[in-house]
Each structure stands twice: as structure tokens, then as C-alpha cells.
Image (tube, rainbow, N blue to C red; front, side, top):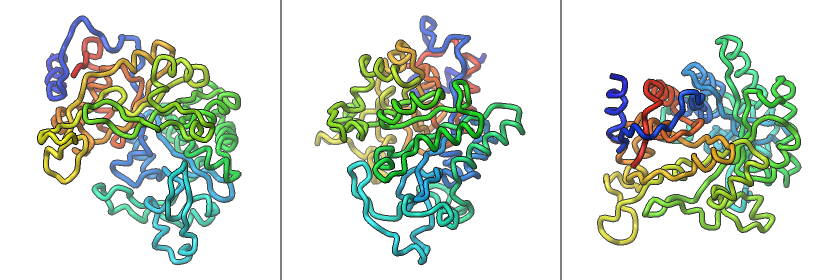
Length: 392
């Protein structure tokens, strides 16, 4: 009966049963659910409230992106530019701080965390970044420090009796180094203060750059994950990472792109300094556009005014998960969201179908804006994990 239930759930994703194929061995640990910026589908991202909600929903890890204040304190924000995620633009006392900066080669305008002291940051309030998500919580929550996030995870671990981890990302490390605000030693010091600067601590450190992960590999025994990005997908669903690689590569003149890092040779190199790889999910399951009018461009099939995942169809899974496992790397992929525009059309507007496909493909963890949906899907997957196999 369980097999029938999950087969029905997977039907909309183009997933079929094949008794010859087993995606997850019975003794393989269940995939981790990482609360992406907390439960950011429900509450403003990178707030203690969003992290706490993710924990209450059952997330195994919570993810704080880390940037630095002017006085060298690590805070949880997705970007150095805090214009979209705080109320700083409405604060007249900071109007003169609006400026223009170049972050990883891109010119941005707004207000930037490294121009504010922690005391000033603490006067701000968080805002919802995405207009289609709940806005009624704007202005309620402060910006937390990394130490506050670690303390929250520790408190809830003791309260619940289950280990809740933190999964910090070092944001724009080359930029922070250029400002004399390097992130790495402060991050390691905070982990040491919590008793977590050890190999099996409930911690992963992630980065889109390579040099700072190599440096961290000499500074801390905690597990490290190399993030993998892309420009987009092409019309046929293949990855477009043309001229786009880790920013420290660009600075040093290394011409390799992110796609080069997930070749067998690239993965073997990552395994020399990191424990895992964190690819955008399209590296694992692509999504092709539909060119119904023959103009060579993806069409807005559903007529909602935007070309996004809802207009695309998934392609056959790649070998990335298997290739990474072959060199001893874990795979934590991102980002999973419930909204229609983030779901390929053949998932039938049901995020559970997407989760089940990726669980069946053998990922070791994933980042979710809605941890509750990820966990419900994981429970369903767990009923028959020994026989499910996904294909497009």
C-alpha cells in the first residue's frame, strides 16, 4: 500500500517505478532538511523568528548567511546590501549613508552593512524581500548576529533533545577581505566559543568562492561545502554558466566556470579541500523552455507575464549526484520553494513531487524555504525509499 501511495504522488513529476534501481540504500542516512534563511517562506528571512519557526517545523539545520558590520561583527543577512531586507531606506537618520559600491564586479546602490556599526544595525527592522510572501511581519524583528543564531540552535537542541545545526555561508569573502573585514577567523572563533569547532559538530560552512574554503580547511575541522551557481538554464534545459565562476577565480585570472567545478576532475579537486558540494538544483535536474512560436526563446506558456519554472519541463537527471558521491562528496542542493513560479510544469503545481524526485535521486540534503513541506515529503519518501527511482 505504501508503494502505491508514493507512486501516485510521484506520477505528476514523471517519476516511475523500477525495481532494478535503488536510489537510497536502506542504511543511508535520511537527507537533511536545511531551513533556508530560516522558514523564509513564512517570515522575513534571517530573523530569529524565521530560524525558530524552521526549528519548530523540524528542520535539521538553519542557514545564516554572514556579512560583517563596520565594527567587525558577523550578522545574518543575505547580502552586504541591506536595502531590500531592512527598513533602512525609511530611516531619515541614515539617509546620508546611501551610496554606490561594487560587489563582486557588480555596481549596486543602497545601504550596506559594512557602513554600519552593530549598534546601528540593531536599530533597524527586517522586511520581507519578496512581495508575494506575507508582509504583515515587516518591522517586527531585529537583525540577528551570528552568535545569536548559534545560541538559538543550542537552546532549542537542549529544549527538544535533538541536535539542531547551523549552516553558515560566508558571503562575498573577497569583498570583505578588501574592506579589512575578513569573515573566516571571526566565524571560527564564534564556533569555538560554542564548543562547535570540531569535526562532528552540527555545522557546515559553505561558500561560492574557493580560496576562502581552502583557507578555512586549514583553520577549522568542521565540514565545508563548495557552492555551485549558474547564470540560468538555456532553452534546452542545459546549464548556462558562461563566463561565470567563483569571484576569487575572476580576481586571480582563473578562467574556469562553475560548470567546470562539477566535472569529474572538478569534483575531485573540491574533494581535496571540502566535504561536500552545494549545486543549484538545475545541475541535477534541468528544466527546458517551450518555444511554441519558434523565435528561439522560451515562451511564457501560462501567460502570467513572466518566463519562469512554471513554463518549463524537467529534463532527464544528470549524473552529478553519483559523480560527487564517487569522490566522497556529499550533495546538498538548493533552493526548494512552494510557489508556482518555482516549480517546473510537470510537477503539477505540487512541491511534494519535486522533493520526492530529488530525494529519490540520492541527494544528501536540500535547502527549503518551507521546511515543513520538505519534511512532509521526506516522511513520505521514507515509507518506500528502497524502491523509488526518478527519471524524467
